[in-house]
Amino acid sequence: MQITPTEIPDVLRIDPDVFGDERGFFMETWQRQKFAEAGIDYDFVQDNHSRSVQGTLRGLHYQIRQPQGKLVRVTVGEVFDVAVDIRKSSPTFGQWVGDHLSAENKRMLWVPPGFAHGFYVTSGVAEFQYKCTDYYAPEHERSIRWDDPTLSIEWPLEGDPLVSGKDQEASILEKAELFG
Ligand SMILES: Cc1cn([C@H]2C[C@H](O)[C@@H](COP(=O)(O)OP(=O)(O)O[C@H]3O[C@@H](C)C(=O)[C@@H](O)[C@H]3O)O2)c(=O)[nH]c1=O
Image (cartoon, rainbow, N blue to C red; front, side):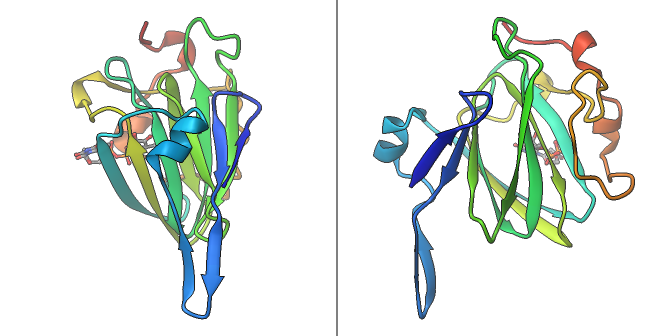
């Protein structure tokens, strides 16, 4: 397993060891001890799985209380996954990192608590699976606009994205309610 810091060093790129043979492949997707040694030392309490059609954009989501760290990956198709640092006291506040995650490259991203997170589906469909360090708390959930001009996220868009009603009403980072 190779764990590499991204341009925002707390966001980690994880490339698992994949053992292929005539049957297919095997890989470990999370192992407490190895991940803890790499700095991802959390108790995960919830696993999520979503399926989205091409052009879907989910995000940018975060919780003002019970902030969730997320260990994310794609099991069908491909997405462009984005983490935005919204930790008020962080030197990288307002910066974003993005990466292509796919069923083929099997790459994972560690998005720590304190980040807003979202993804855009670049394949026909995509299934997205992730572990969370805290529980879903809809009353604390907030969304920042995916197209906030201050963030200028370079989404690999093909046409207008498919965005939920909730995310269409998201606020820009400057006006967003943050935690801490
Ligand atoms: C996120 C979540 C949603 N739900 C329900 C609420 C709603 O009826 C339905 C769909 O919810 P949403 O539209 O919020 O789903 P979605 O837009 O996929 O939300 C997710 O987006 C990505 C980008 C993240 O980072 C996640 O943390 C999460 O916020 O599922 C749960 O029951 N538990 C959960 O943990």
